Image (cartoon, rainbow, N blue to C red; front, side, top):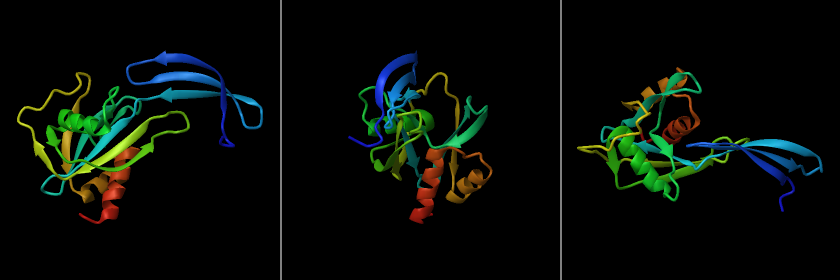
Amino acid sequence: MDKFTENTIESKTIYDGKVVHLKVDDVTLPNGKTAKREIINHPGAVAIIAITEENKIVFVEQYRKPLEKSLIELPAGKLEKGEKPELTGIRELEEETGYTTNNLSLVTSFYTSPGFADELMYIYITDEIKKIENPPAGDEDEFVEILELSLDEAKKYVEEERIHDAKTNYAILYLHALGRF
């Protein structure tokens, strides 16, 4: 057993929604004291670094209510129950951008906010995308605009904080490190 393990004494569900499940756990700490932990369970998510034949990166801009502003981000979405991350990635790429691919390579996965959530984000990359003649409809409550940016343009948007989320910043840093642009 890990020397930092916190044992759950009691767990109480506060909210069970479409995207997240919020619970409050009473735990015993390694030193024997007790504490409360507010925990968000999330099914996980997938983001796609999609690169066009012109070496442009495909992004979407959308409004993020918790921030009260729009951000430019990688196309991404949550895993559906029992769905493999690769399939989620292709589905989200198609719904959000109108592109598809048959070739995804896993770049990495990481926990987005391990202090209070268990969401595991997968990032895939592809440079073999093609436009779909009749793309599937996206979520009815999701409004996005597609942008295709060079790496230098994306870096400028990072400086301006128009790109300001972890997954997209990670992708830009990854592409910069590859030195392929």
